[in-house]
Every structure is written in C-alpha cells, then in structure tokens.
Length: 377
Image (cartoon, rainbow, N blue to C red; front, side):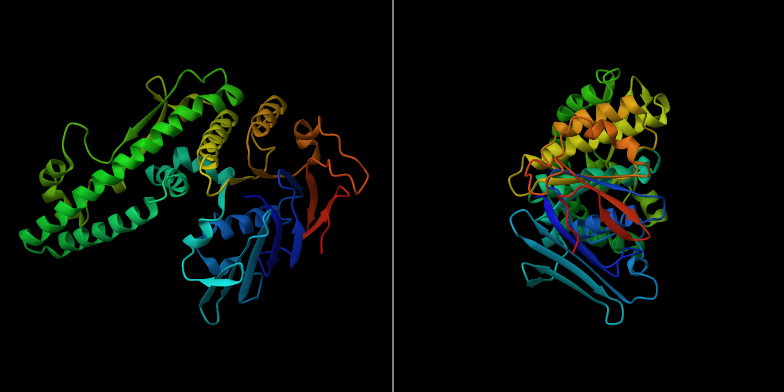
C-alpha cells in the first residue's frame, strides 16, 4: 500500500494536521527537534501499534494531553485509525470505520519498516534485536506465522511456569513434548524465510556495498545445538533451567549472525558501511514483503545525511529506484537530498501530474509543503 493522507492529533510535538503524501517518494527537512522523527513515529505506530522510540505509550501524547489519534488513508481509499485515551485506558482501532480488537488487524493492511540511528542495535543490541527484525518480515510473508508464534509463546510460558514452580516431572514432560514440537515447526518456517532473505540480500549489497557483496555470509542459529535434538538439549540442561527459572533452548532463542570471513560484520565495517548494510538488509526484506500480494511495504529512513557521504547517498538513491514501495525520508539539510532529486523534473505547474516526489519543511511541529503539488489541510 501507499499512504496518501496522514492525520495526527495530539501526537508528540506535531501540530494537529493532515498531510498529503506522494505514493512513491517523500522528503521531510528540518532541524533536530522540529518534529521529523515524530512524523515517522506516527506512521510506524499505525503499522505496529507501538513506538520505535519508547515503550511508554503515554509519552507519545502531546504535552499535558491525555489522548492522541493517528489515521491514514491509502491509495485505494482504505482508512486505518488508531487512538488512545489515557483517562479511560481505551485503545480504539478502526478499519474503514469498523472497530477491531487486535492491533494485528492493522498490520495486515500496512507493512512499515524503518531505518534510524537506533537501527544499529541490530549489530550491537544482541539477538533480541535481530529476532525482532526477522519476525517483522515473517509476519507479512508467512501468513500463518503470527498464529503459530502466539501458540508457541503460550506453551513457552506454561513450560517456564513448570520450571519455576518445580512441578512434578510428568507435568514438565507433557509441556516439554509440546514445546519441542512447536519449536521445531517454528524453526523450520523461520529457516525457509531466512534462506529467502539471504538469497535476496546480494542484489542490494551489489548496489549499496559492491566491495563486500561477495564476502558476506549469514548464519542462522535455530535456538539449540545443531548436533543435538531440542529434547536432548533440554534434558541435558534441566538442572541449569531450574536454577534460572526458564527454558534455555528453543525457537525463542534463535539468532542470525552477519559475518565477513570469520569475523563479525560490524567489526570490519565503518559506521557508514554498517548503515548501508542495514539498508541493504531492510531492502531485501521489503522486497520479500512486496512479493506477497496482501500488502506492499512502506520504508521510513530517518536522518539520511548521518554517516552517509555523497557517493553513498547516490548509491542509496539507485537502490530506492529499484524498490516498488513508498519511501519517506527525513534530513536536517536539504542539500543532502540532492542525489535523490537531481534527475527528477518537477514542474512548477500545480496541475502537472508528473511530480515525482513531495517535499516538506518541518518547524516547531508544523509541516509546510515545498513543491506546489502538495496540499495541507
């Protein structure tokens, strides 16, 4: 999908506003603290039901406000809305005016991916960050995965409760058997997805990081030792599990490692190269999502000028031109966007339908259009 209209009310430092977005390419330029990241956060929130900046949802509301609203309309006039009232604790989810109970219903209609300065956690934040990245793609590409994952986590909680409460062996064995079956099912589906992601990655590395595209390897670690069955690994570690109080092996412990030769990729690349690798990985996942007819991804890139020199930004522009999805980019200075707009002939005629992008200036939470094709209500 492509978002054609975004509306926010009491969201962060943004003025209550409605903006019209270009279906392909959008730029938001402004100083730090002006509201650029808040705008990306609003788009991310409608796609995920959570923020990429905070786990405390009450911080999202504007200062001294006790509610907020985000809504979008896509290119096919599908309307998605999400509001939160902190006085009542009510979260209201609407799709075309009809109320829904689950945030996942929104995510079935919109796939939002983001690259921010925080995205470097994929390298330095431990396995949890890499799990989150992979699971985001799997939700959209493997349609049964969310149901499968919920059931796995339900059984994981049951098994952990048995371990913590030191229940009898027969009860623990019962949940261990189910846990192993579900772990192996999840691991198999995930392995197929990671294989597809690895197959897609070299194309984007060839555009963004051609000097290392043939040197990168990706390891998928299923969550228990390769030379043992999961049941064997659990039986061997039962004493340690009892001391820790939770399951030490299983599908919840998987990891993906990125290597150059035998070394961790992040130890071999500069900060700018790391960002290009993150973008290549995100583009590869976006392409997998885009192959699923249900939804096309929206890509958000925060602070495009950070860590990327002119040559890198030109490579990134080339990569974006190969993507079939909507892209929203923020920058502090307009001149860093030049590689993305150099070849775009933007008419000054407001009725011209050949406008290739929309550009906005962001200041003190207000958003103003730069080119004439954009209207703000």
